[in-house]
Each structure stands twice: as C-alpha cells, then as structure tokens.
Image (cartoon, rainbow, N blue to C red; front, top):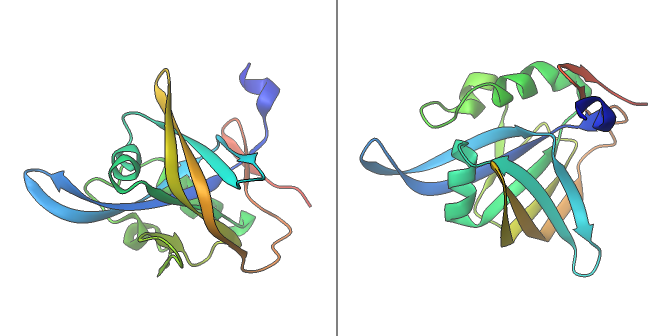
Length: 163
C-alpha cells in the first residue's frame, strides 16, 4: 500500500505547551515532520493532521489544543528531515536544525519563519486511529508568505518536488 499513496506533500507542524519534562514543568516547543495532513471542510474551514501517539508533538498538541502547519520549500529538505528523525523532548529543534521561529498571529505557538505558507489551527476534535491521533483543527489564520513553486514532497524515503 505504501507505494500507492506516494509522493505526498510533507509539512512541518509546530506546537508549544507547558509540560512536565523529567519532573520539571516548562514551556516546550517542537517541530514534527508530517506526511499525513489534509483540509477536511470549507465551511467551517478545518484542517487535519495525523500524529503518532508516542511522539512528543502529540503530547504538546493535546495539552495546548493548537498547532501550525508550515508548508516548506524544497530547498529545506535537510532541515525537514532533521526535524522528522529526532525527538524534541530534550532538544530545541529550531536551534539544532537552524530554522528560525516567529510567533503565530492568532494562537500561542511558534511557526517556521522560512515556510512558504502556514495554517494556524485550534484543535476541535481528536480521533484515535490505531497508533496515531488525528487532530482536527479549526483554521483561525492562514497566509502564503511567498510563492514557492517547489514545495517539499516525500516519495518513500526520498524527497521530491513538483513544478
């Protein structure tokens, strides 16, 4: 089945929440690479992402009830891969990946400054689907920052793009 649904557009999802890490409460931010995401409604405008239950980002999104979907240019494939292969529980992925952060417009969450476009969402529903949670978000703000024609996509284990 894997070959039937590729390539897929890959995005970075950013989140932030106050959580307990090693017995200490602190505000943590994270960036996760996601291939499973989609719009689900025009009215109201809804967007869904699927996040593994064991991922640190899942914990942050559950706690904060918010996330940002960052659409990344093809030229940042190395940084996107970095964010998808490490946990943010004990590292600052913004700092370690070299990606810059900026504040979201309508929610308390960072977004990736280098993103070509982004969608800010407030979680309105969680759906458990085996080893993943689908977070359905109400779109509270979105913007295309620049007109990147080559957005990042993933085909099995390699990145690709369209023109």
